[in-house]
Image (tube, rainbow, N blue to C red):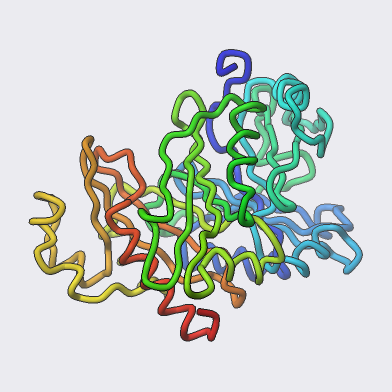
Length: 363
């Protein structure tokens, strides 16, 4: 199926938000994204305002409905600011749609072509967990700023990025008992494979646990982990997410960097808040994970976690939630050969999340 349904890369992630103008400013100022295109009242669009934000090979779109009855406005009301669309770049959006729907995917947007002076853009979409759409985008005959209806923005030459380079993976939370169904969905409709499986013994604390399976395409370019809660003494982070998100959805987005020290330093200076791990985590760190090419003192100062697998090591850190609802957050990751997801850090990470849950009164 991989040959019949090739996927090139993540095309973009679209967020439905309450105020797209303010969200665009947040991602620009705090994450270092550049606003490259826009649609709204000034471009002749009467129903939606959207800002395209880019950094490295990452493209975000933040969109708001311009009246309370618009579907985007309603979904933002239901879920808060959230990832509504995971868009994949494909060579043929119609073929991808037909392949997926023939194998059981639920239709969302039939194959559609839009055009302007910059060419023809083709796209289609199917339904995923919750209200998330999986979109297929073919840009092979389009050279515009983003899509027909969008106007390119004037770029400032001195705009400073934070060094983020690509989307590493996108993690979803689903309800208890639903993980295996979505694993089968990705396997049967899109030809994805299970890269790794973490059970409740691997991902647990004294109070809560979860289970996770990482799905990836044939090339390993697209990684979509899926979490579900497991039974525990108290409410798990997944259960908290499901409650405040109003159901399943995207829990966090992992963004890659080639220099995590510089990136995290930049993000912190811009005001982004990260989860805190106790200083004891860094005691005997190199004895636990082996030699690394960075000073442990600097990692401890910034709160960066380290893990190693058979292919190398990785460095990672997690933001606090980026809106008032305890739902969506981000991971910054630098891979130094490692292909895993920081299994050795799960306990420290989830204990940090539980400390935040306790502050919110949700543990």
